[in-house]
Length: 205
Image (cartoon, rainbow, N blue to C red):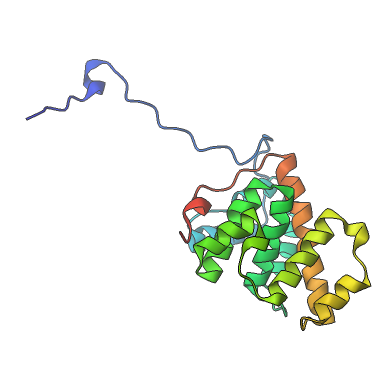
């Protein structure tokens, strides 16, 4: 029988535990948050089991957190002619163009979860054109990617293509708004080296 010795009793310290990685490269402590924002972070902890690092990053300033969360929740969760999966697919396609590590991890997980297809989440992050998509989904992603890569080339023919796949005027607005939001969010994440929560990498595998 092998006897395991407790090294701490012989003057040797156990190996230190790794500290959790920082949320971002900027050392910005949490600001004084409103009761509403504190409740929002507590709700995230309760429902998800963690507070997304993007919210922790914005929490250095109450007004900035309020504005970011309100716009995100309106674009991604409010009623829309675009499904939640379609909006998450746009988020991943745009983030792939911008090579945004944070958003690819977080929203790739959302695509896996909403679609029930872990392979789709990977394909979306690497190359959505390799995925088996409906013609409507492909049209939406083509539009979002063009808006990200060459926005000055977007014209009436692009909007007409979306109409041809059954998207209404409000749907086209929402597609543009989601793509624009993630171009902004990707750039902020890159500017401050925002890091995704480890939980995203394990979700819906």
